[in-house]
Image (cartoon, rainbow, N blue to C red; front, side, top):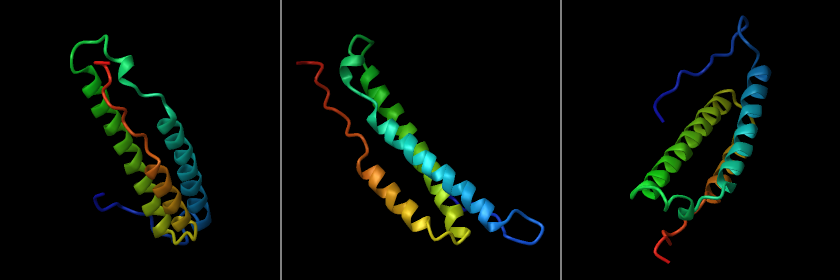
Amino acid sequence: MTDLTLPTIHLNGTSRATLSEGYLAASRALSDAIRAFNAIEFNCRDYYVQPSGAWAAAITEREAAAAHLRAVQQYLKAHLIRLGDRLADEVNDEACELWAEEYELPEDDSND
């Protein structure tokens, strides 16, 4: 991820606690969204009636969507680390587990 512009905690700004709570809540909600995304049934049998290349395109699009989710996850983690949130490591551990469970793309069994 490119360098991010991260918040600076100061007397006239939002409190560290408020920022941490917001980023942590977003991170937890994103973890739920990633679980739901990974649980979506994704099979070539839903694409074989379309023109040639539809399954490959669907795989590429799904991988791009997963990459966007990971990017948001890294964005949130960077903010939590900057804020010195003790839960940043917990969020990172959970993220690693979620992406380790990432969907495995089924083999193209349209010829069966």
